[in-house]
Image 1: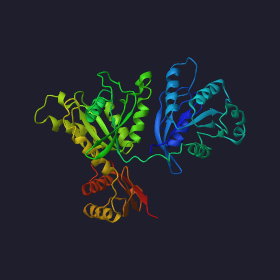
Image 2 (image 1 turned 30 degrees about the vertical axis):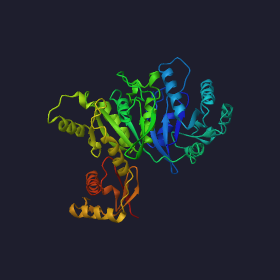
Image 3 (image 1 turned 120 degrees about the horizontal axis):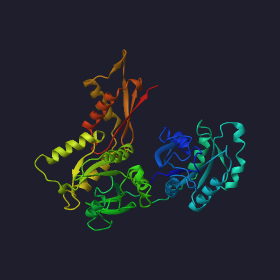
Length: 435
């Protein structure tokens, strides 16, 4: 089931980014008093009362001739298209403006649920000034203060209540995987080679793929759903008309995948943008396979594969768990290995470990390498249990979480990996104080 999405929309300087940061729980967006500072959509995962959703921050919609206004408007319209619910932000201090009315006209055409947030209502007197906003036609306005966090609970309650009901969706038991990477690494060619037919347009021009395309196929009696996504571009490039869906669709594909194929171009080598693209999948906790495409283009000797793999490991140290496969979409080299690898990683991504077995491993690890101490206080690990899958997540109940040093946490993670096959999937360790 896909994750629902909330887009925060409004004219410039109504405090959208401040609200976004409050909900996301971090200062992700740039916040300044200058209208139009937020140039791009910013994405985050957020949670409210057990409901997880994607959150999009947008630049303000404005119909004037200021710099970037056309592009900012386009970004917001894309966010509106991709959202399940729209939070329309206005400012109580300026009242209803002509720009607010124009934004409202865009939202009418979107035909999506809209929750109206009247921001900057920092005190009771200002909270009484919200009634003029009924004229925008979106029902009850919700007075909030993004700066102080006031009223956000009621706002989120209303937004989540407006999420579409997906309980009637047919369950899809296929293994979903997506291909991500910067433009022109050969994702579309890999799709065609895997399918054995030209279902996706292939071009030497970077960025030909504009939309994500879901395609089902069967390999060795296992059903897969493949999502091909447009190359994720550097921020300055997503303003182009032809790219307007690329980044959002790619992020959604990652969120809705069991496994992500992170595609590199062997001919061009590793670039800085590759690290950012891979980071999206890693932070989302998805299973990952590193696919080095166009392997046929290199002049090779006995050391070429080994040296390239060492280079990949050095550049992507945070993906040490991800297997690497060297392929060629053109010659079909090693492509037959991919479905089996995807199935293995998907299985590991949903693996559960019995608490008794897990605790044996943890206690043996502690016996071999005792827990650290800080100023005479020693970390004590009382119990461990798995609390989630996709990715596998383990809680360690300890006497004081602050005593868990990063290096010792990594040691325990490595011990878990030595005893259980978690190839291709990140695992999360969380420390909790035992009361």
